[in-house]
Image (cartoon, rainbow, N blue to C red; front, side, top):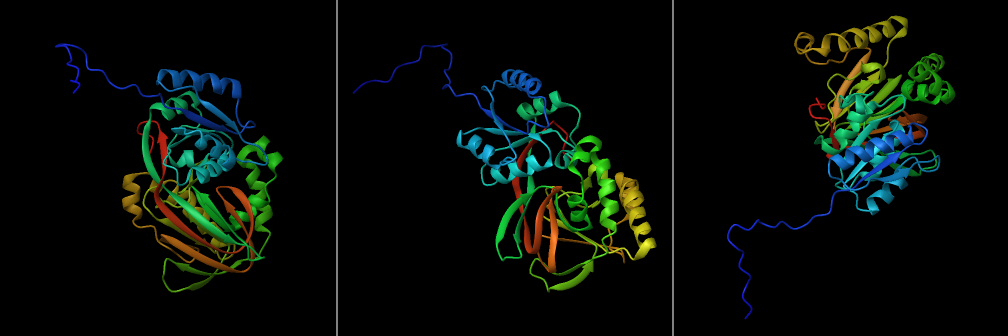
Amino acid sequence: MRKGRRRAAGAPTLEPMTDPKTAAVIYNPVKIDLESLQATVAREASEAGWAETLWFETSVDDVGQEATGRALDRGVDLVIVAGGDGTVRAVVEAVRGHDVPVALLPSGTGNLLARNLGMSLDDVPGSIRAAFTGEERRIDLGMIRIERHDKTRDSHAFVVMAGLGLDAKMIANTDEGLKKKAGWAAYLKAMAASLRDKRELHVQFRLDDDTPFHATVHTLILANCGSLPGNVLLLPDAVLDDGLLDLLMARPGGFFGWVRTLAKVAWTNQVVRRTKTGRELAGEQKSDRDLHYDTATAFTARFSRPEEIELDGDGFGRAVAFRAWVEPGALRVRTAAGAIH
């Protein structure tokens, strides 16, 4: 019988060699300065002891799902998204079901998930450093199965919100060329055009397994988090990791109804609820005759006619019905220490 080798007294303990981790960057070439970004990523990856980063470009035909799939097939340990809200949503959809963290390099106009994560939107080096060395946390993922007029169904992920009515019409009416030049100011023109459409949503809906209800509203929003571009706090109680979807249905009655609604969003949500003391003074977020709030883990809706629908700021055609649900803690995100609140 062969005897085992004896380690000499005082000899160092030998640890097995492990391969360095590898990250992949999924990037929208329209949104970034590729040469500069590659140099910064290479430096930060090297300093963190990671292997050379892999790069996958999106395109008009592939906004991110296929590129992410190729990265995951290579066995990467981290997926970094460099693009706007549409790229983020597509990448997250592809990562779903894979236990791989995602990091964001805010780019584009909205950066909705980055805003709700408390990330700085103008510190690319800091965001890259956080991707390799930052904190990691699990957040909820929204899922939706949309039924079309021809009875076909398609499923998608969303990280911020799904919207119909005025919200979706505004997205559909937005001039993409103006959006590139003027940013979110382009939505003001789109909102004005959308407000001229007086048609309301006639919806039969169910929260979880409760009794079905019928409502007539201007806007219906299901949210995973509450802040919109411009730091507008639309749903103050929406939290990224509470295992719930937050529902907002709005039907302001006439001119003064819109005034009350805008005042509530601009003052109560934007100012009062921004501080702990203000939240205590304001109390619970309550429904009124113009705004109805609720929460659920699942939401089913059917409309009287096909309606425009948007996911995370991108139009997704028309829906006659949908079922949305939350997958608690389904997404691993990496940000700078202390960024997530």
